Structure formats: structure tokens, C-alpha cells
Image 1 (cartoon, rainbow, N blue to C red):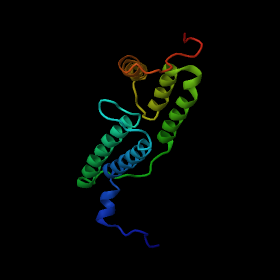
Image 2: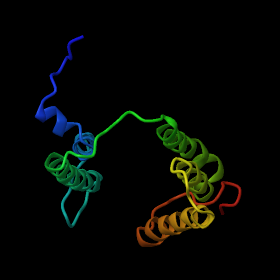
Image 3: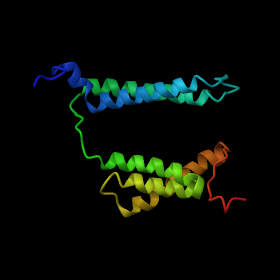
Image 4: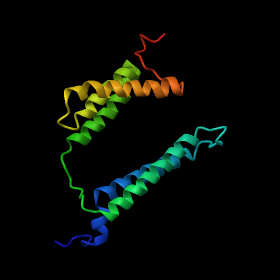
Length: 161
């Protein structure tokens, strides 16, 4: 059976891990920038709601471009279809956060999500299972709660004042 695409150097380089990772980041950043373009941008001194997502999208696209170039230059690392367990666990973690956040608050939801996502990488030590969720919760509280003073439901609704 003839291949749809002949085996070319272009496709060989394009299907390296770095190239595909870079293309994925560029695609995600394009979606972020497109969605942010629907919101007022503002200026540096008077930031609008579209300012931060646009800046984040530009940063993601730069990282994606760097990954694409590196993957193109060194295409040795190949992408092979692997087991579906880790991606399924990560998708489960995202859905769990969406469901749990309103019910039990951010701290518990983040701990559950971190533990589910950590199961996607086998061989973790017990200290990582304990410290990783605590470090992430502390970092989120520090950045979003203290530094940015954002309204984030850290505790379950019954414990909030």
C-alpha cells in the first residue's frame, strides 16, 4: 500500500518531538491571541482584560518557535504513539478541577488535581506526592491571593466567611 505522504526529510524533521511541541504551542498561542483580540487591550499603564492573555499568547508563540527551530535542527527524538494512560489522567485532572472547584474550593481541588496528574508519571517518590501539591497550593496562594489580590475560592463554601 502506497504511503499518502512519501518519506521525506521535511516530514521527518516535522514529526520530531521538538517540532510537534513547537507547532502545538504556536497553535495554542494563536487561539489565545484570537480570543484575547475580542477584548479591549488597553495600554501598559491602563491594562484592559485582553492585555495579559495577548502578552501570554505572544510569549507562548515565542517559546513554540524556539521549540520548532530546535526540533527542526535536531530531529533525532521521534514521536511514537504511546499508551493512552497519561493523557487520560491529565484530562481527568482537568475535568476534576472543573467539577471540584465550586464544590470544595481551590485548595482541595488543586491537591486532587495535582495528585491525579502526578499519577501520569510513574516512579514518583512519596515525598514528591506530599510536597508537590503543597508547593503548588502555596505558590497559587502567594501569587493570586497575596500578590495579585484576586478573588479565588481557596476554601470550601461552608468555611468561607
